[in-house]
Length: 309
Image 1 (cartoon, rainbow, N blue to C red):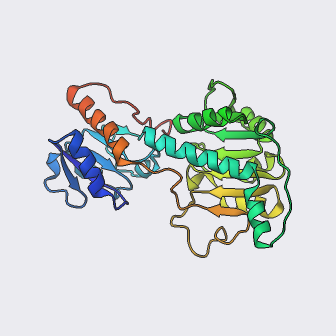
Image 2: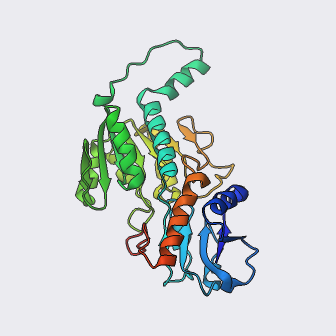
Image 3: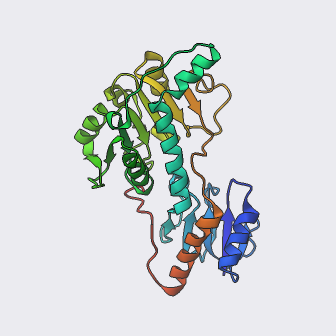
């Protein structure tokens, strides 16, 4: 039994060690050293080359190393009869929630403005409301969005969420559908994007939708760069429609040196690391998935490509 590992990270040895502890009989082959392709039954991948997985005739399951699956959905040769499992991991969820809470608090308490004042050696107190008077909106109420919403509710924020279908979460005002999106945006002062990237959500952070937010709202995008229309976000920042933005993802990564986001005074650029998959906890999910396949049991968190996640 062999697993093909392909990642853009330099943590291959950590993954190998974590998987070896859980499944000593699992042979891990690191791409491009595939060996005999017929030996490969499983693949644990991030950004595999187009068509590479189609070369594995006995592949039984594909595990994405992250919550997103657009790096696989974009492969026209992806084997249609092989289940793809998205990463749902407590370490990934906790890391994302930590970042979202940090970013929301940073915008809520106007830390950027204080940093600007510090550089100007200007001493002035800025009045901010308490959390119950701050309306936070989360686009996407999947595993990551729901956990972030729960923690923000605990902190006392007025939290709403929008999703493709209606959700019910304690303390969260839920919206869905096109009409729901408009109402959701109109009430949201701090917008957090945690949507999956699908044909329906691509470019959702555009001038029309950003224009529905209250003037001076803040944007936090920790989902995918494809959700954002860059020129529309920049225009909203320059006009004051957006007061500031925390951006962890961009349509082109790494962010090109000539991008205006780097030097924009109202933007915090994060290099796509709001949350990362930690081998220590994520390897357990992969091992459980492999065992399920070997025993003929149902896999959890299998991607529905028609739905997009």
